Image 1: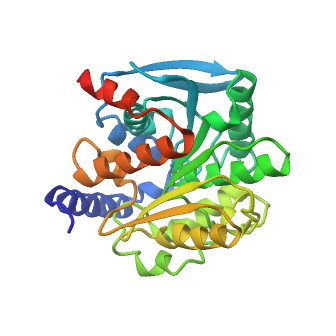
Image 2 (image 1 turned 135 degrees about the vertical axis):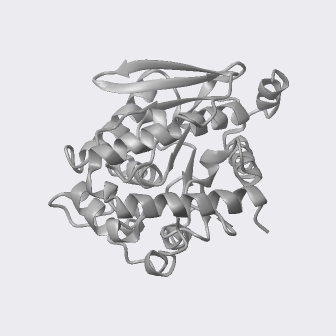
Image 3 (image 1 turned 90 degrees about the vertical axis):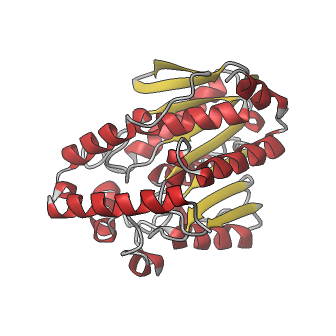
Length: 314
C-alpha cells in the first residue's frame, strides 16, 4: 500500500503536469530546463556529503564525498532529463543520498544535451568519464555505473559501448526507471499515460528523435533494449507501476536475463517516475535507496559499516 505522502505527491504532480501542458512549457526546451532546475533545487542535501565541482577535460563534473568512504570505490551517476534537460544539480540530492547510504564517493557530469548536441555526444561524454576514472587508477571491479531515466538508459548504452571497445566493464549497474526504448514500443507508454504524473507520453517521439538525430531509434547505443547484453555486469532496475517507462525496465530485464545477465528487477507498486528523488518525504524512496545500497554492497564487497558511520554523524 502506498504511503499517504506518495499519494499526496502523486496528486500534486498531476496538477503540475496539467499546468505544463496547458501552458505549453514542454514546447520550449530552455523553459523546461529552467523549471527542472528550479524544482529540484528545493530537494534536500545530506550535510555529511561534500559537493566538489571540477572539470574533467572540457566536461563539467562533480565529486560527492561522504565523510566516511571507501577510498578505492566509486559510483558514476548519470542524471536524467530526456537527454534534453537535467544536470548535475537536478540529480544532486539523489546522488548525495546514494553516496551517503553506500559509503562510496560518487561522480557526476553535465553531459552534452540535445537538441544542440544529438547522439552520440552524451554517450561520448559518459564513456570519456568512465575512462577518466580508469586513468585515475580506479579498477573496473571497484566502479558502479548508475543513472536515472535517460541517464539510466545512457548507463546501459555506455556498457554496450565499452563492450564494443573491449574496455573492462564496471562491477555493477544500477538503473532507476531507465529509458531503454526510445522507439516507445512498450505498452505502458499508452496504458500508463494518464497514470504517470511526471512524463508526457506524446513527447516520447519528439524527444527521442531530437536525441537520435539521423540515427535509427533501434540502435542499441541509443535504445539499449535492442542490444546484446551478454557479458554485462549484475544490474539492478527499479521502476514504478505508474510510469510510462514501466515496460522499458520489464522488457530490458527479460532481454538481459535471456543473455545471461544477473538482473534484479524491482517493480514498485503505485510509484511514480523518479520517486527516489523524494527521499526527504517518501518512505518508499528511502526503502528504494536502501535496496540500492545493499545491492552495491553485495556486488562490490563494500563494508556496510562505512555507511553506518556516515549516518551515525547525523
